[in-house]
Structures are given as C-alpha cells and as structure tokens.
Image 1 (cartoon, one colour):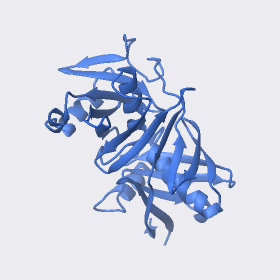
Image 2 (cartoon, helix red, strand yellow; image 1 turned 180 degrees about the horizontal axis):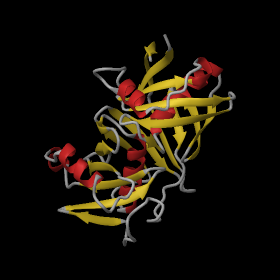
Image 3 (cartoon, helix red, strand yellow; image 1 turned 90 degrees about the vertical axis):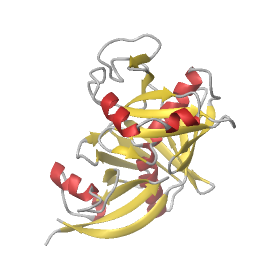
Image 4 (spheres, rainbow, N blue to C red; image 1 turned 120 degrees about the horizontal axis):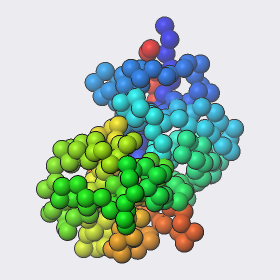
Length: 271
C-alpha cells in the first residue's frame, strides 16, 4: 500500500499540506488526488498544497496547488511555512524558495518568518486583465477594484469603515468578481478598510480556494493598493481573520512580508 509523509502547517490560519519529495518516493500530479488531500472531510484539509521538488540547503524549488487542484503562482504564507520547515530542517536562518512566479528570499528574525515577495506588477498584460485600464481601476457593479499582481492576480476593494466591510457577502461578491470576464486567469479578491489606528483590516476570497483566514500575497497587494491611493504608509500591519501580517513596501519596490508560522502536525496519507 502506497503512502506519503506530509507536514501540516499554517500562517494565521491559512493552512497548508507540505510534501517533501526528499522524504517521499511518490508522484502526486492527479487533480483528484490533490483535491482529496485538501478536503476537510475526506483528506487532511488545507487551503493549498505545497510540494518541495528539490532542496540543496540554500535553495529549494516548490510547486503550489490550490485545493481545487489548479496550480498557483505565488503563495506568501505557504512559502513562509515551507521556508520555516526547511530552515529548521537544515539548521539555517535563510533560504531561497523558487516558484513559477520567481525566486523568493526568506529568513527568520525574532521568531517571525520573512519573505521578499518581489515587486508589484501593474502592467495590465501581466496581471493579466482582458483589456488596458486607466489608474489600475475596474468598476464592477458598485465596487471599484484596484488591480495588480503579486505573482498572481489581485483586485482590492476599499470600504469606508469596518461596518461597511462587515456587511459584504464575501462569498457571493468574491465568486462574482473572480469569474468576471475582465480576469482571464481569474483573480483573488481583497476586501479592506483602514481602521482608526491606521492599520488595515482585510478579508479575502481566493481563486481556487475560496474564503480563507489569511492570504499573504493578498495582504501585500492590499498594502500596495492602499499606498497608491495615499491612505497608508509604505509599511503597515494588515489585520486578517486569522491574525496580523506586517507588510513593508521598500523604496526599491520590493514587498517584504512577515508574521508567525506554526507547525500543526505530521502524518502519513494513504494513496
């Protein structure tokens, strides 16, 4: 009977199944298998699955899948979880993670795990969008969406206050925007507002995963959008359903994300 070992980790409740190929002699490529692993009823349960394809102590290559079996580009919290696992395994304080969206530098400081998510992308063809837009804004119904990419497409909606944010049906609106023709590769949807203490409260609907407690690349996109709209500093805390991330948009345009990651458990999954 075939089985593989896995690690379950989370960053602010954004949870992941991590499979280290150096510990397993199995190929997991079937969408049905990926969907079963991520099922909270029939499998381990997670928002995304990350497969460590290779690791030479200084650099690792990772493939990322959503819970519906589709391949994902960037996953900030997932990359931080993989980085934390590998840095602990290799007894080091920094590592580079290669994804289909590029190479991401990760490191540990004061028990928090950091990742350099790279530079935000504003070019409409690279987000991608169906057509060129002005000032990054698309209007859908009563909502204004600020569009950009952080290695995957994002659209950020800002609300007047937390009361207005809390009234939104995240699932209904998120599904509608995700499937809108303006987004040929679908889109992650962030719902945000600036709080009285100037931090940013954010909720998220992720393409391929649905409602999640946190989204790292979404938090980066939200900070960048807020700064571009002149309602935030370049460094700010993003308060998500699962906790807090600190996002710092550096002067060289790199976006740094930091926060906690946690090991939940390890186990074996029967194929």
